[in-house]
Length: 116
Image 1 (cartoon, rainbow, N blue to C red):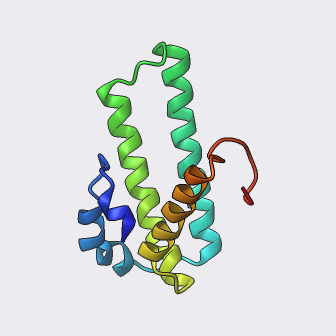
Image 2: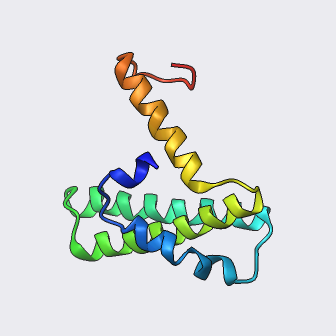
Image 3: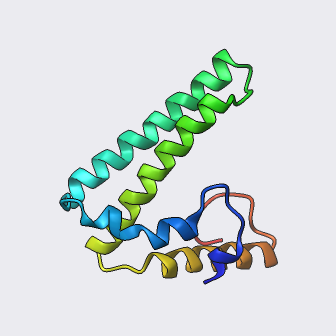
């Protein structure tokens, strides 16, 4: 449970406590979940583009709230995808953090490619 030791603005503890709220909804098939995930991610990119273009890269409270809402939706979809594929989201997050620590120890955080 490495990821729980990190500090996030979003309260992941709250999301885990209330993950059933996401999973109680009618389950969407994976293809629709992925479409929604891509669409919501694109909405974050659009908000970010406007922050850079119109607001001189200064994030307003309004923009921050919009992004936070979209991230909350994305997290809900990730919970559902993990459930659909029988993954434990905590295990996935832990593996990712372990991978990042390993890259940091080997001084290969920068660069590209999965096999660093």
